[in-house]
Amino acid sequence: MIDGMPAAEVTAVSDVGPQLRRALLACWTEVSNAGGAVGFVPPVTEDDVEPVLDALLGRVAQGREQLVVVKVGGELAGWAVLSLSVSPLRRHWATVLRVQVHPARQGQGLGRVLMTGVHDAARALGLEMLHLTVRGGYGLEGFYAGLGYREFGRMPGAIRLGPGDDREEVHLYAVL
Ligand SMILES: CC(C)(COP(=O)(O)OP(=O)(O)OC[C@H]1O[C@@H](n2cnc3c(N)ncnc32)[C@H](O)[C@@H]1OP(=O)(O)O)[C@@H](O)C(=O)NCCC(=O)NCCS
Image 1 (cartoon, rainbow, N blue to C red):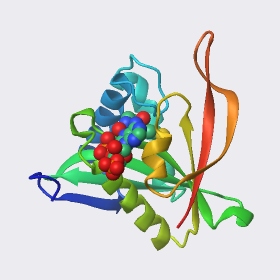
Image 2 (image 1 turned 90 degrees about the vertical axis):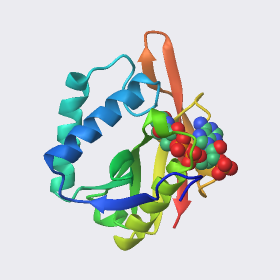
Image 3 (image 1 turned 180 degrees about the vertical axis):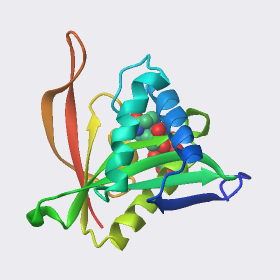
């Protein structure tokens, strides 16, 4: 239990039903509109996010990505995916994508709980190492440093948030 909250439950999910799909869509839209760095520039609507979510869920159904969700009191509080490599030379590691906690629940320790679940799911898949990228200028490196991630490079101008607003992308890795 985190400070009087019901216990957070983290699970790796392969079979996404309509209720979870709706909750993932609402969460991704609300996190994006709150300024989260998860693939969109606000403002976005569920109509913008839906095709991107459905493509992601298609990869989850094919086993190319592993979805990990954190729930509190049975309600979705956050989620992330592990994107597995198709290259036989890279099957010992994966890229973590879309790490997000619902805006109403941020800053309560759930991001850490979610990432611990992502690491457990990665180990269960036999992975030895994880890679992820963060947008420069968001201060997110501090969150990941506390989870064992180390920076190994920055790509200048990799992310174009809008005309004249290019951001660097920071590459991090963690050994499991
Ligand atoms: C980033 C995010 C997942 C963190 O989840 P959270 O539940 O708010 O984080 P937690 O409460 O579990 O914080 C865990 C630790 O990281 C630290 N932390 C959290 N966000 C941080 C940030 N932006 N910068 C630096 N440190 C941060 C916390 O202070 C805490 O430190 P502590 O353990 O020493 O107390 C969440 O804020 C979020 O969804 N943000 C919007 C989406 C996004 O930008 N995702 C990142 C994609 S790369």
